[in-house]
Image (cartoon, rainbow, N blue to C red; front, side, top):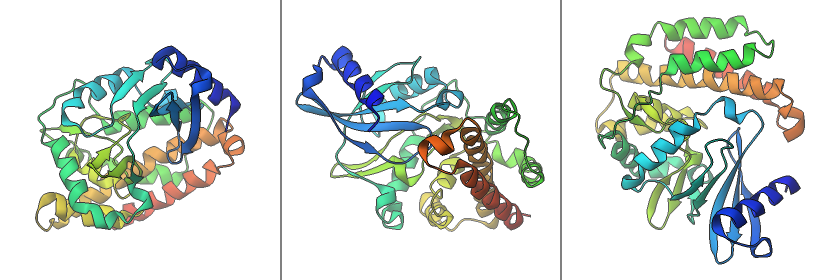
Length: 292
C-alpha cells in the first residue's frame, strides 16, 4: 500500500472520525475504476471506505455536483452513507457495507434487482440542476486530451460523427436523474439488498445511459437488462439506441484512458492505459458498424 495514502487516511480519520492513528488500520484496497483509490479502513470499532483521488481525477468530476447528488439521493437509501466529502480534494469517507461487487458474481443472475434499483432512481421524481449532457461532457474530456498535445485518430472522428447523427434520439425530452456510471462494479450485493455506489457522474439524462453502462464488462449484460427494465421486448430502435449510448461511453472512456497514459499513469500504475484507450476505440468502431 502507498505509504502516503496510509498517512493521509490516518490523518483524515483523526480529524473527521476522532480515531487516533494507532486505532486506525487500512485493511485493503478495493479494486476497480480508473480514477480513484478506495480503501476499507477500520477506525476504532467501525469500518469505513476512504476514497483518495488519483492523479488527474479532478479533471473529470464536479465535486460540488457530487455532494449535491449524494444528499439528494439519500432518502432513496440506494447508497452507503456519506460521512465526509471534501469538495476541494475529493477525499470521501463513507460507511462500509459488507457485500460483494456485482462484477465478482454473474451479473445475469441479478438483472431483476438491478432493474428495480435503476427504476427506483429514474422514477423517483428527484430533480437536479446538473445535466449529464453527454456531448458537452465529451467535448470537455477531449479538451483535456488536446491540451496535452494528443490528437485523435481518424477512427475516433468517424465514430463521433456517427454518434452526432443520433443526437436527437439521445436527448430525452423528459430527462430523469441517472447514476451516470452504473457498471457492475458499482453495484454491491448485500444481505440487505443491492446497493449502488460511486455517484461522481450523476445528473439529469436519459435512462438508457445507465442501462448501457451495465454492459461495461460485457455488452450482452446491457442487452439482457434492457427487456427486464422495460418489462417487455425492446423494439429494434430501442436496441439500437442502447448501442449508441454504449458507443458514446466508449468514446468518453477512450479519452480518459488517453489522458491517463499521457500524464504518465501507465508506467506509475503498471496499467497500459494506451492499450485500454485502444480497446475502447475498437469497441466504438464495432458499435458504429452495428448501428449503421
